[in-house]
Length: 94
Image (tube, rainbow, N blue to C red; front, side):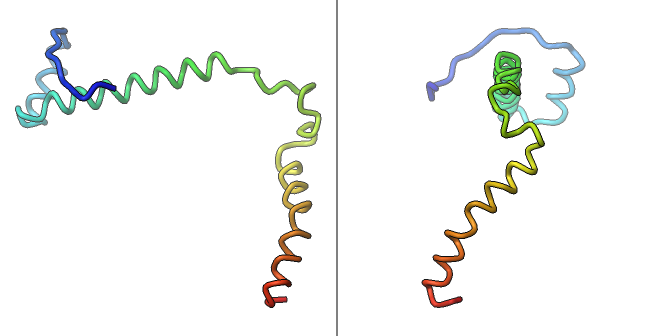
Protein backbone atom coordinates (compact mmCIF):
# COMPACT_ATOMS: atom_id res chain seq x y z
CA UNK A 1 0.00 0.00 0.00
CA UNK A 2 1.33 3.41 -0.93
CA UNK A 3 2.08 5.66 2.00
CA UNK A 4 1.35 8.90 0.18
CA UNK A 5 -2.00 10.61 0.08
CA UNK A 6 -4.07 12.04 -2.75
CA UNK A 7 -7.14 14.18 -2.75
CA UNK A 8 -10.34 12.44 -3.85
CA UNK A 9 -13.61 13.99 -4.87
CA UNK A 10 -16.77 12.05 -4.06
CA UNK A 11 -20.19 12.77 -2.71
CA UNK A 12 -21.69 11.76 0.63
CA UNK A 13 -25.24 11.97 1.91
CA UNK A 14 -25.76 15.37 3.57
CA UNK A 15 -26.75 13.88 6.93
CA UNK A 16 -23.63 11.69 7.01
CA UNK A 17 -21.35 14.59 6.14
CA UNK A 18 -23.00 16.77 8.79
CA UNK A 19 -22.56 14.02 11.40
CA UNK A 20 -18.88 13.68 10.44
CA UNK A 21 -18.37 17.44 10.79
CA UNK A 22 -20.04 17.53 14.19
CA UNK A 23 -18.28 14.47 15.60
CA UNK A 24 -14.74 14.77 14.22
CA UNK A 25 -12.38 17.75 14.34
CA UNK A 26 -11.66 19.25 10.91
CA UNK A 27 -8.03 18.11 10.82
CA UNK A 28 -8.98 14.48 11.48
CA UNK A 29 -11.92 14.02 9.10
CA UNK A 30 -9.87 12.61 6.22
CA UNK A 31 -8.21 10.14 8.59
CA UNK A 32 -11.59 8.96 9.91
CA UNK A 33 -13.07 8.61 6.42
CA UNK A 34 -9.94 6.80 5.20
CA UNK A 35 -10.04 4.35 8.11
CA UNK A 36 -13.76 3.72 7.59
CA UNK A 37 -13.16 3.09 3.88
CA UNK A 38 -10.23 0.76 4.66
CA UNK A 39 -12.43 -1.23 7.07
CA UNK A 40 -15.29 -1.44 4.58
CA UNK A 41 -12.98 -2.62 1.79
CA UNK A 42 -11.59 -5.32 4.09
CA UNK A 43 -15.15 -6.42 4.88
CA UNK A 44 -15.98 -6.55 1.15
CA UNK A 45 -12.85 -8.62 0.41
CA UNK A 46 -13.67 -11.00 3.25
CA UNK A 47 -17.24 -11.41 2.00
CA UNK A 48 -15.96 -12.25 -1.50
CA UNK A 49 -13.55 -14.84 -0.10
CA UNK A 50 -16.37 -16.44 1.89
CA UNK A 51 -18.58 -16.56 -1.20
CA UNK A 52 -15.91 -18.09 -3.41
CA UNK A 53 -14.80 -20.64 -0.82
CA UNK A 54 -18.30 -21.75 0.21
CA UNK A 55 -18.58 -25.52 -0.06
CA UNK A 56 -14.83 -26.13 -0.14
CA UNK A 57 -15.21 -28.63 2.71
CA UNK A 58 -17.14 -31.50 1.16
CA UNK A 59 -18.26 -34.39 3.34
CA UNK A 60 -16.86 -36.95 0.91
CA UNK A 61 -13.41 -35.31 1.12
CA UNK A 62 -13.42 -35.31 4.93
CA UNK A 63 -14.99 -38.50 6.26
CA UNK A 64 -13.13 -38.01 9.56
CA UNK A 65 -15.56 -35.19 10.34
CA UNK A 66 -18.72 -37.24 9.71
CA UNK A 67 -19.26 -37.75 13.44
CA UNK A 68 -18.66 -34.10 14.23
CA UNK A 69 -15.71 -31.82 14.69
CA UNK A 70 -15.66 -32.11 18.49
CA UNK A 71 -15.08 -35.87 18.34
CA UNK A 72 -12.39 -35.42 15.69
CA UNK A 73 -10.57 -32.77 17.76
CA UNK A 74 -10.80 -34.98 20.86
CA UNK A 75 -9.22 -37.85 18.93
CA UNK A 76 -6.36 -35.60 17.80
CA UNK A 77 -5.73 -34.43 21.34
CA UNK A 78 -5.89 -37.98 22.67
CA UNK A 79 -3.33 -39.20 20.12
CA UNK A 80 -0.96 -36.38 21.14
CA UNK A 81 -1.16 -37.16 24.87
CA UNK A 82 1.33 -40.06 25.04
CA UNK A 83 4.06 -37.85 23.60
CA UNK A 84 3.27 -35.03 25.99
CA UNK A 85 3.19 -37.39 28.98
CA UNK A 86 6.54 -38.94 28.05
CA UNK A 87 8.13 -35.50 27.65
CA UNK A 88 6.67 -34.43 30.99
CA UNK A 89 8.12 -37.48 32.74
CA UNK A 90 11.55 -36.90 31.19
CA UNK A 91 11.61 -33.42 32.68
CA UNK A 92 11.49 -35.02 36.09
CA UNK A 93 7.99 -33.85 36.85
CA UNK A 94 6.46 -37.32 36.63
